[in-house]
Amino acid sequence: MTDRPDTTPETEPLAAEYVLGLLTPAERVAFEARLRSEPALLAEVRRWESHFATMADLEVDPVAPPPRLRDAIEARLFGLPSASLWNRVAFWRGLSFVTSAAALAALGAVLLPNMQQGTDGPGTPGPDTQGPEAGIPAGTLLMTHLIPTEGSTLGLAVTREPSGILQVRRVAGEMAPGRAQELWVIAGDNAPVSLGVLHEDALTTLVPDAETAELFSVGAALAISDEPPGGSPTGAPTGEILALGTLVAL
Image 1 (cartoon, rainbow, N blue to C red):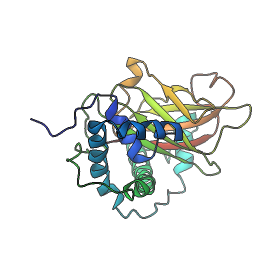
Image 2 (cartoon, rainbow, N blue to C red):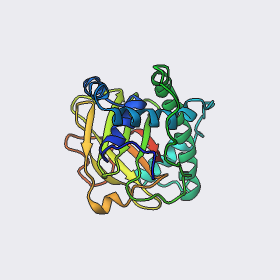
Image 3 (spheres, rainbow, N blue to C red):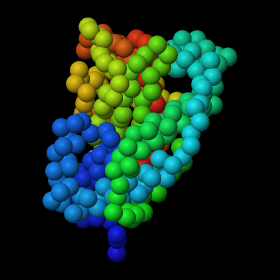
Image 4 (tube, one colour):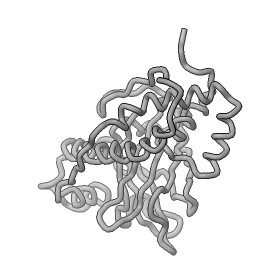
């Protein structure tokens, strides 16, 4: 017996993205049209609103990254020597803390306008969340908010749907003329692995292969690098880091 609405696997992440305000204007209009005629979909939205409500109520103080953070990131992505700074486990845990706190603050800012639209009552309990080092079951919805690095204005919301498909939405900044923006995943001690080059449009859909998909877990880092047209010619990041974040489970 379950209290979950009768929805399809594709509907759950779409409802979550609607509540988080991640849909494009056209997608939002189409989704709201469905809400007027699909009670199960509306119930799914109410469930996600209830699930995210606790996050919206959190008071997250700004977290200033340590001065060594950018140097350590560049050392990790570009192979620059940084032995005194580079303790891999400690660094990525620190990165996870900084970007996760920023992501919570960003999510709260997105959630509050949606919550103020009101609900008819409390939804059913949402899925359990897990800590940054916990294992996650297959099909878990993952997401992060990639925050801009110093000198960058780029901000992105990334959702890894239960199907494995990545939805990358540019929510701030734009692509520089004659340049490309490439998305990378860094899991544990693994070298950065390219997930693909972003489209000029706000939304990019990526489908990682099976081997790359195994790198996605809570706490894995995502980064955007500035690259020549078509992406990195070397298979590794070559340009400036524009934005970064770490994955959390919803």
